[in-house]
Amino acid sequence: MERTGEEDSRRTLDTGLAADAGATASAKTAVAYDGPAAQLRGEARPAGLPNGDIPTGLADLGTVVSLMRGTAAYHEGDPASHWYQVVSGTGCTSKLLSDGRRQIGSFLYADDFFGFEAIEAYGFGAEALTDMVVIRYPKSRTEALARTDRAVGRCFREIACRSLAIAYDRLLTLGRKTATERVATFLLELADAAPDRRTVSLEMSRADIADYLGLTLGTISRTLADLKHAGLIDMAGPHHLVLLDRRLLGKLAEGDEPAARADRPRMSTEHPRRCAMHP
Image (cartoon, one colour):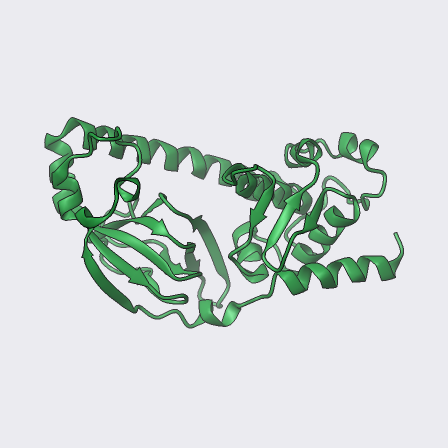
């Protein structure tokens, strides 16, 4: 691959994935209370409960909260007095180290729960990457309801089990996968939630993606450019990517790079044991 073509691909991707790190670095808590959750339509109620059989008491406990982009639902170390469900918008949970490095624990989308895992204090902060609407539930009162309502109790157990399964997957991704495998895994996760399972909406910046995958900005840019040059992805607008070959991306995500390279000779070479934490 000629250097000029690689640089052009990278510039195209970088333009589409503008790094809006400033809003993240200065997140403030700023919320507007819109009213009780019971006023929302049924599809905005907690997932996991049977349609038409959502306990009225649970909806009555929730408060609809609007978060502007760059504002926090709560900060790391705050008392864990509430848990939340996303109605609309995109957010993330994150933790800062003493030297300023950041690890994003999860991206938050519609119907996702967050703050549920905290016991006494939040281990990660949570903020809005776009304007968001969430439902905020008082933890002590919903836990009391779960003890007396089997449907709510079952819902909470399912949330806990799903969160644990996701945590195990994240452990594998961050602990054993290369940069290419991490990026491919991330794109497939986003595509799985898309209606066509191909068009990926990127509401987060490159800095956010790097902090989520434990990589550098340069590594994210190079890896995306390599995937684009290999014909596996393409840009479909400022904040959208299209997966052109899910099968080969799946092979990459599972560590089968030799098979993927056999089908796509244009892919750049990356030693399979190369440390993906560095560009």
